[in-house]
Length: 245
Length: 227
Image (cartoon, each protein chain N blue to C red):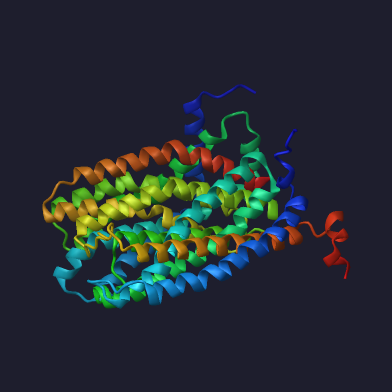
């Protein structure tokens, strides 16, 4: 049996597939979030050194991981769109950007909330914090560039180029900030939590999975919106039951 | 049409940009005046204590140089875009990347080089020691071409957009952070008596990377913006 690998690379077919997938992702996220939060806040034991304040990690760590990973996924989709000129890849890239920026912001915000009781300061110029902040700037640059070009195809391609340049730059920025920080003898914080309690691990993984599912659901919903907006003049959109009402 | 040799082409485009700039000297001078003004604002805002100023000087000069080069970025392609020259460059049989490289070099000679030459005078205002001044000039010499090269990508992407000036800074500034860190870091190392070579080597590496890749990326960006 020959499988048509490209069936869902057309916005018209993907629109339906995304519509079917969204309930699965959003419901499982809706179930996992309370479970994860419950384990994080009530079941997981109190940390010996950081007492209760460490619990913000259960939101902070998944948000940081996702903010970095989404940038790579976004750059990969953008590159696909630029090289193969596929419409859907570019739409996915622009649908991912706001979610990535949101996670970067949450990561910075919760980091600040954690830093106040731990380090005694809302913000320190730690390498990790600084590079996360720059990552947020890169997301905002991508969104701003995309928003300021009226022609969507040109916007896609220009923003794709920016995302690729950004992803090449991310490691350079990370290491430069890291070396800069060690030279300046800033706050030396090490997460020596390799021997984490099992329940803590479970809470963390549950929260990570929940954030994943949430991100997928939201991005699929947003890409559906973008598809409808871009293809509003095409026949298949006009034939949709929701546009006939 | 006879094909020009590669370096002849580079020289031609650079000379043309320099001649154009000489006819409109005000553009180049505003960037310089901006640079001097930004640097001079710092003592007025943080206070005139010489000790504090001496410590802050490398950072201040570097940030001011970064902002000044942002200011002139918008003009890199816009005049050529408006009068149709850029379209001819895209159609030309020569490699667009080489044309872009020439534009980057010309931009650096007009905005980066004057800053490098002015920086020692501004450093003296902050009472920097002679050795640190030397290091600062060398880092600026290595770093400002990188800023022009990275900036070219942003300038090409935002060509002909509304609010291009602010947007180009938003896009380019995060990418310039490594240059800023190593540039200011080298001067800092010189004042504190540690080895400056690692910073210099990294700045040189960034410059080489930027010179190899950005003309190509900028050429792509120009094609996207002009289609």
